[in-house]
Length: 239
Image (cartoon, rainbow, N blue to C red; front, side, top):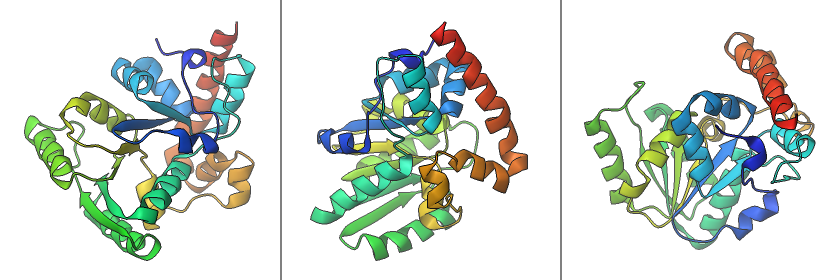
């Protein structure tokens, strides 16, 4: 059973600079992914055994403080923060970045955006088939594409928990030397197909509320029921 109080979580954005070079798996955690991991043992294992876990949600930051968790993150570190930091860092020296996941349309927009914002990067993409589970043939095609690209930075964007479970399950088959981030919706944010909350909402930890207001039919269960479940679980860890 996953317990928030036992997880090793990155403390602040500045800690991203301390992540060593080489093959490193970086996942994110928020209230929703914590709830899902309570019911999905493989997802829980992926989050617990990845190399780094960043607190992509103000609820995680506050909960860790309240339950006196082993890790005491000082601020939210969003998947977008990780993305910008890693892309800026690689752009300074040049290299190859790979986007694996999402649709061909979104990936094409990501390539255009990267050409404008990160001119020193070569961008490689791969769009996997849209299906609940990949076949062995699908998995082999994805693995071969990644290994052939041999990127200096790899982003996996298939939404949680699919992206974390896939990357963790096939980690040993990826013959790469780089940081790997599972960042879900960041592909859409970067492409401009999904709008992030304005800065004020982000700074005040209300990005979830902005998304709920914008997409109530899709998000109400995740945020209204999900946040209540998260609070219930934290009560269990506290007492």
